[in-house]
Length: 270
Image 1 (tube, rainbow, N blue to C red):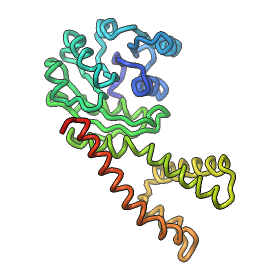
Image 2: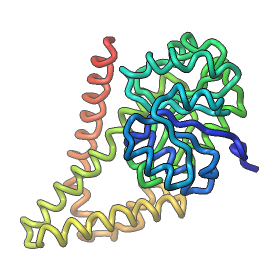
Image 3: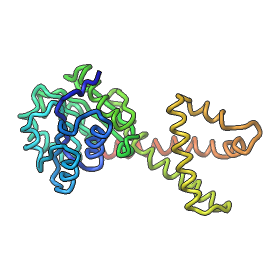
Image 4: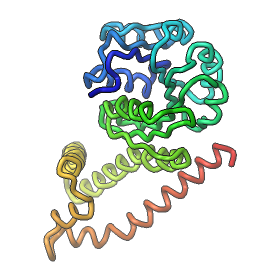
């Protein structure tokens, strides 16, 4: 049974992530459009949600005055403090979900002493409802709050619960992964071109293969290593290619994550 039910959900910020969350809730059937409130200063974005049947507001104060059961803060980290100040009088006893990177549960709970808080870290593919989101609960959030948040973010991809100290790692590894995957497709495309394929044809086929391989592993629950064994014939061309690729890819992946984590700590002032 859905925990979302007929709850009123407000999304403050209809940019890339906030808009994806809001659209995904409706498109997946998780939430009726009439139960969705969206706040954004951009009139075109508001109009798009009104066409879906949602209600839109030019500022967060007007949305919060409607007293939604759940409020999702989908604004940039530098904007969040002002939004929290506006929200404080309206969210006592309510569930608040923040997707602002780097703003801790402690900080949000301090600004909203009456709210129950969950942090969520989604990545870019949530825009196509095939992304990944990590969730961490604050000290006042209940098990039901966390499950409700998981249900909301499951409408736009995978959603996993973890400790807050793991969120930076998740947002670094999973958040950067779309760029890493794009780079891999691009380098394979260039290798294919060097071997004689037209670039547009090679790219199209590689992207289709990447999507199909991922879908197959997910739908069948196949571990990536088992999938490698499935598609690698003894003494075949794939085995030869993997022998050349794996050492460099292994070392490069670890180095890339280490570099991204170092930059994350730098940006956080650690």
